[in-house]
Image (cartoon, rainbow, N blue to C red):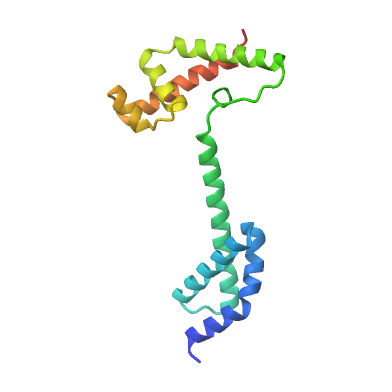
Length: 166
C-alpha cells in the first residue's frame, strides 16, 4: 500500500471522529464536514508526517479555529456598518416612548441641520438613502476618501450632539 493510500485509509477510518472533534469548535456539523475535507486535502498535499493522525487532528483544529476567527471578523465588520439606533425603525408602544423618540429625532434633525451642506448630503445619502460611498462621491464631485471623511465627520457630529444633554 502506497503512502497516499495509507492517508486515505487513515482519513476514512477517523473521519467521523475528526468531524466530531471539529463540530464544537465550528458550531455546526456541516461546517465541521467542510473543515475535515479541507484538512484531508491539506494533509495529502503536505510532506509525510511522523504521526499522520496527530497531524490530521492539528490541521482540523487549525482550520476550525480559522473559521471561528473569520466569523468573528465578519461579525465585527458587519456591526461596524450597522446604522446608529436613531436611524433604525423603532417599535414604539406607548405615548411616553413615542414622545421620547420624537425628541431624539428632533435632536438628530437639529444636529444634521448644523452640518455644512456637503457633509449633510453625504450623511443623508449614505445612512438614510443607502447609497455606497462611491455614489456619494460621484454626486458630490469628491473622492471616495473625502466622501468617507464627510460621512464620518457628520455622524461623529450627530452622535456628539445626541449624547449632549438638552
